[in-house]
Image 1 (cartoon, rainbow, N blue to C red):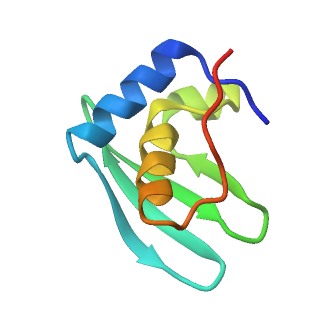
Image 2: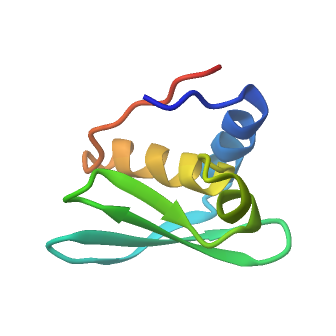
Length: 90
């Protein structure tokens, strides 16, 4: 399980609490979500078959690590009973 920094976790939780994450579309294989970030809206995809998240933000693209947008979506999906993951810190 990937470790997540406290800063990323905190920012993701704040995005969730501010209701900035939402489910756009759910198919048999994926859940498509949107997260309103500080400057733009980001697309997050949860691949059910691979049990993996991806995000279109620069942080995820450059580091290939969990970003705050993914954390916000994980929390949302956990609350909705649709995510088999939990969040762990570094």
